Length: 293
Image 1 (spheres, rainbow, N blue to C red):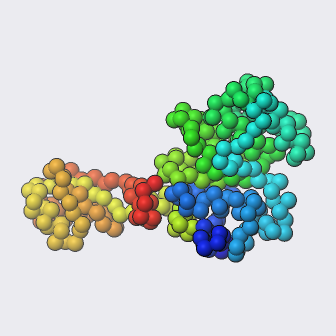
Image 2: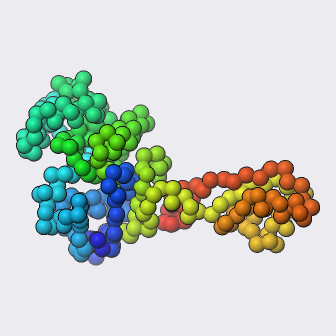
Image 3: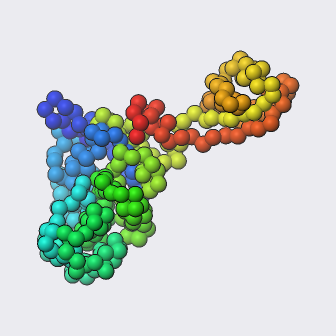
């Protein structure tokens, strides 16, 4: 709560109150340099906050660090491996450190669909396979919380889709809570049910992703005759109106298309078409941060 991290004169994270509901897939979205990686490193105990506290599983991280981190798996940037060892041998090193049963390796490899390649040396793996191996490493030991920092970075489109579908399956398959950071809005929109938007170290929004969509202004598309007079009437009524290619585009809050249709007809206009455009998340993000994502 109230998490703040300062590096000399730079405030990387300021008064952050991140609330991740158990069992959700939480998308942590923000431009590069917004404070996502710094936040994840604080959650993992890799760096200490300047101010504020961290509570995971209703326990304070400072007082119960080892107990908490046994339940947390992470994939931070591109993981490092012993390239001359096989996938299985790399996971065996982690398993011994964590003192887990050997069956955990096969279980993790099966989840990330690397079982057929477990005896293949990592130096022959594609980047996508290495990311899947990193996920397997994060999954060792039935982790309750997974922190994934930009897990699709550098992957080709096929690799991105592969990792995305795997991550989407984790809450249901393992009962785990997943926090995934990204600077790409479309990626978060495809996987997350909850979202937090961070910009210049400050949390601008967090909540269910459907709630974010309600923040934008509704756009109504109208074809009414005669167009110039209909547009002028709507402007006089107080709507924000633009005309493009024979269509009237109207934006505003609490706009009811049915009531609008009745109003136009009542004033003598012929309404040939009226529809409602869904709120564009990119526009909402832009209005919150002032930057595209």
